[in-house]
Length: 86
Image (cartoon, rainbow, N blue to C red; front, side, top):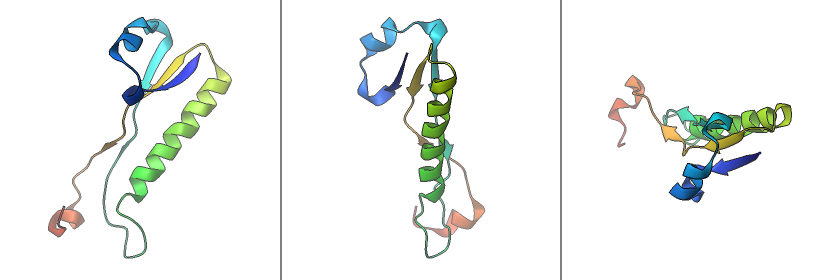
């Protein structure tokens, strides 16, 4: 059917979706240090890319569903990050 970004559609569009044929997916990932050479969002970026690849694969296998991408969420408490400014 289609791939939709939750943040780009209206609530009316959500209401019009077939609830039995719609799946909401979300990428969850920490924001944490990875040494001096990588950005804090390394895992976050990878999680979003993995989610996109997963949805692309699912759609190729079964395009009878709506795949709705929920905005990615940074999560986790990391003891090493405790003393960082964030």
